[in-house]
Image (cartoon, rainbow, N blue to C red; front, side):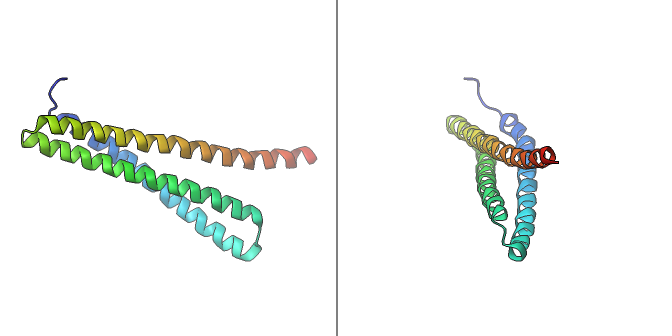
Length: 135
């Protein structure tokens, strides 16, 4: 394996920062939707709203794990840079590898969250299509 330089983990900074921004935007959007559905449920007591809130709760938990793994990945990139700086190259390589694995886990959770989001939207589309068929 070639020796790691400071630029290798530094390249991940911008990528991880953009991913974390996207994750935070998802989190904020879910929080707003959950608050709206909560208020609507208190007025209407509709069971379909409870199912939507449960779905959003799952997606919110996945987003939390995406953020945790993404942030931890960033921390390991910083640790890698520090280890390179103090000439501990072997430990730096392992820290960088662990950071990559954590980033990979974060992206796996993102894929799962996207699948759940898509399924929820397909249910809404199916409801509209049923209504249009009855017309």
